[in-house]
Amino acid sequence: MHRGPAPQDGRLFAARQLPALRAAAADLCWLLDRGYAARSAIELVGNRHTLASRQRMAVSRFACSGEEVGQRRQSLVEPDQLWGRELWLDGYNVLTILESALAGGIVLLCRDGCCRDIAGIHGRYRQVSETVPVLRLIGETASAWGVSCCRWWLDQPVSNSGRLKAAILEVAADAGWKMEVDLTFSPDHVLSHTDQVIATSDGIVLDRCQRWTNLARFIISNRLPQTQLLDLSLPP
Image (cartoon, rainbow, N blue to C red; front, side, top):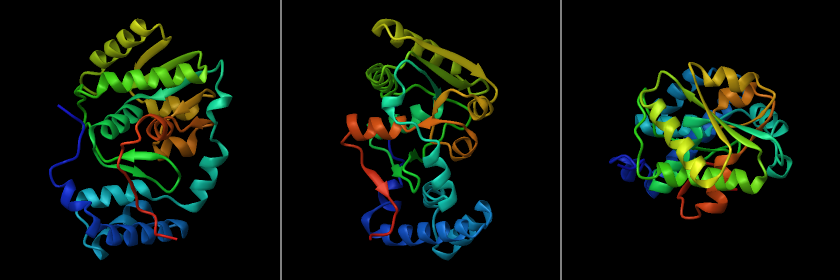
């Protein structure tokens, strides 16, 4: 199994669809900049541009307000500031983005500079062919950054979280990396309130956390150049 594109993605995100998707993304950002609620704004934009559900998801994950962009940039920590520090990971968030990138799935380059996927685990995670290679990429990157320990946070209610924990610890032990894995009912709550640097692209968490680093974007840019990034920004 792979975390690759859905069967309809070739049609929904073909080149001929991009003008409409970019116009929709621009409209949504315009509404968010003026204080419109995200849910009603995406419904309005989706209806106007007759977007399918996966197209609406892509546009909504791409977009955020200009104010949110500014706040997220202010709390961003660059890799050279992580030497000797712990790095706390929003486990499923980081993992599924990179699995999608490695498997040729849709990966968005979003307005705030984060990469996001449009895959979903829907309460159940299944390890795929890309899982272990992605775990190694994360470990190699954190090691190169001089991170003292990677602490993964996984959603306890998601099926197979225990198996993923075991896989993470096995990869770490084989490579000699220090990694810890915690299962909790709300990783978002933990990551939103810690003073440790976190790795996530979840917009809600980014707006609440103290400090974050753009781990998935860094790995995609530097280790996965074959990734087909979908940028819904309007051409300059």
